[in-house]
Length: 514
Image (tube, rainbow, N blue to C red; front, top):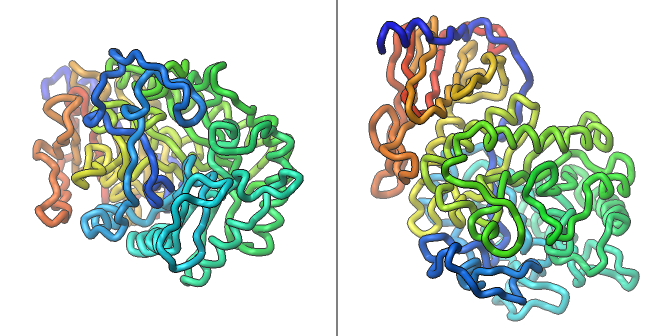
């Protein structure tokens, strides 16, 4: 580092950083889609798409979710068998991120039939349902959660198969699932009634579904939960796409304000919403009208700040309809519809970690990444079970960033700073410094000794990430490598262009962290 760089370094004093708030011990959590659990269609990874989005000309009138897609359906979705949640390699990778919540939901959960027998899965599912969940598959979810120190979050069926003669929701499927869960000495920690109710028609709800119907459904759901599972938290509404450019007039949307206004007071124990800053290339070029983004914008403040914008949209609704309740973001990734091609590269790790830092500062208690192991936005490649750059980012966050959120100082152009108490070390502080400048190095002046964990890549769109200059890779059996920090003396610390750096200050003696 040159003299000029050292002179311009921002001074950080970990011992004096004050407490802002706290997050849940399972703050960093993830989704395993119901489509994965039961076997169903999900967003096809780009490396298996035959026709490029830019060259697509065919318009499908029967595309899933009610949108006329310009891509062939075979290039949007793929059928997949049920995921093997007992796979030893997958278990090892999930265990390293625990404790966490695992959310088993998504569009397929809205109309799934629970086959409450030990018989082989029946095909097709009964009328009013689009998929079947077996005892064996749900037991696999429970065993996975227990093995990986995860608590289960889910949602329930709201399709025609559970409606009474007046069209009201009944707990016929939810009751079976809860009873079977209890029989396995397990529990569901929290549940949304169903996935993304503000786009209910696209998610399997009956035709004409409106806010008034949602209010009646929530009232029936809460009465059922009070009796059948009083310890289960009710999260909601779980809306998506508001406060940004994701939704378009082509997509029928119910306003969250109307959904919440129609529900009885105190309906939710947790206020939840989903956030995607854009639609992936699959949907942005599909004829849906949803806005996309570009690789060139991935490190821009305009892109990263959308996390704040969505929160500012939903926070007043929480304050009005669920005052004092914790906020959870129960689905998020770089883009809806399976993620962009660069979601599987180091380029998206900037968004991943910056988003965690921003939401923690704002007071969000839990964030669920979509997904653990499916499509391009999965933390883990669904075919090879190879950790992607975002997995390594998640692992470092998990090991270093504790529950108490500290004031690191203002986020500056090209330099985003976040601080938490250091996990597992009384008085210690963990710093996260994100340099989004692709050409210029920056520096921070840390007045205490520390350990540095610097993430870089040869190219921003590389699928291999480096820790302190060494490639991060699992061993042959899927075991994780040793994650070691580089000892740093007090003084200026260089932040390479386009880099992410964690700094662990174990001897900070910060009173908020004792």
